[in-house]
Length: 601
View 1: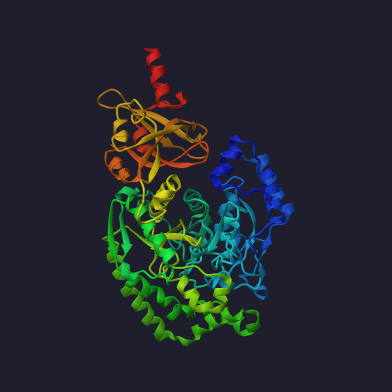
View 2 (view 1 turned 90 degrees about the vertical axis):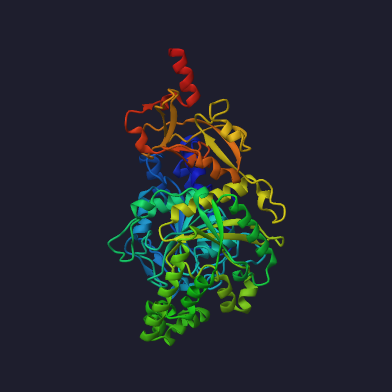
């Protein structure tokens, strides 16, 4: 099988510096599909000639820096329309040819992304196992007969197997998080309404959410930004409030950890150990940590399938189910048919109870900013799911089903492996529109565990987890504020350069030395420069203390390097350079500027 397709950041670097073209990439994608493993991932794919033509147009007419997703291959779950392709929702007899691209797909295409095809799913997006499809059951990329998770099974496996760089799924009860957990990738479930559900076959229309699968958090956030927007065809859409655009840094956050008595791992000690280890790593990143009761969350989750919301699942499919009962899998039909048990009185009772539970949860958000939970309490093989398809599906949804009912945002990230070799994962949850804040903490967690995987290998011997910090000015080795790093245990990891998407300014200071300010510019800005930086390894427990001493207008944010990595680094707020700050970008770095200034004098 050909090498796996790279991440978004890796492909961007290859397009800009490595000579790769979308035409080359299209051939790579097609060769990967011809030898694909990992099970029945795809329901349909874009014809090879069409994929090549799209890639050739990008190669001939677009600059890699002009489009945020230039030449990036992606997949779409087959309950989301794509113009000219059949939408099956995992049921062949239900299939229809979509007349137009829905807003979420159109925005990605306009951003330069390359659509590869449509992926397998649990039928009508009803299930968390990946084993409820007439097109076959996807197995996890980790093998051993392990389920892939559903309902967005094909989308998750396509990303984890390296067939595409990112994929769209949907998430009503956990379908954008459980498959991410079982395939060792990132699953971003945005706040409901940020990504348009226009052109999505509804599972539970008032709760449905388009989700993103990627191999790292930064890639998932890039896709979210490119795809986000309110559409006239989607009555459920919501804009991102301006005050929630800027993320809060991890060291300022109050982390909520479930009470021990509320955690259930269904006898899986390995998953319990992994979750404790992940929490231990997060404690070093957050500002404060407190205990949170899960009772209200869990009770809300029970309403999804043991309350009147299951009738909403039936509402959109009742006609088809009555006319074509034989076309629907028995397990799917049995779940949908339970919706007939509820009447209008039950609906209002359910809504009233949910409102009470939401009020309790909203109160908790005044005490914590982020809640961490296991994504799944345990894992299953395909054979184990076949023995109890509904009961074990319910176990998989314990920590996911409540999110959309309670209007929460969520990011799922890998959390190592159990001693038995099963993938572990954790999910960060926050109130609506906390998406970018959750992503910052999730990215810091993954950076820390990648930099020092032994830091979360066990609970009893955590080790000193570290994170890379990119410094650009006074914190450089030998400069006036470098001691703020070394006194906190930081060690120099080497020199690097940013991607050519930054400007460096000299801000005036009272001491006359000047303060360097690094500002990220738009993809389309022709005046972006690569800037020299130093990378320092800093204990994650010291990040919050370092941040507290950073003077405005500087802050810690994510800096993209020219090799495609995203690392923490010092950034400057744009307002500070609007009043005559000296643009020193052409010098290429703070030291080079200082040398040139000294030579001139």
